[in-house]
Length: 112
Image 1 (cartoon, rainbow, N blue to C red):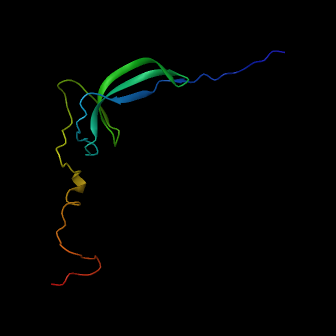
Image 2: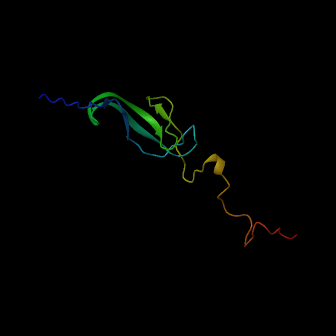
Image 3: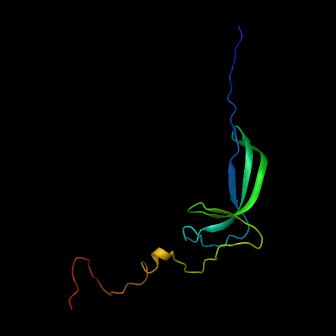
């Protein structure tokens, strides 16, 4: 009696992104967070989830929050470097020092 075994062969070409070079915080043009970094993007041929052959490689700027990827080319566009104390444009002023000193519950109107 012959036995026939069918083994599935799983293969694919996923892209893996690894941080590369200067990891200074930069401002993302899409989401305006200081989460952009330089990275190396590589596409691999995988067989049974084991990366075997690197097929494509490029340097990119990548945002860790919105996942925006922009090809990095010498002398071309670079994201703006985030200065110390940088706040997202929509959050500016929300977490600053309070204007009213002392306990002021929201349901009591201040007397004039």
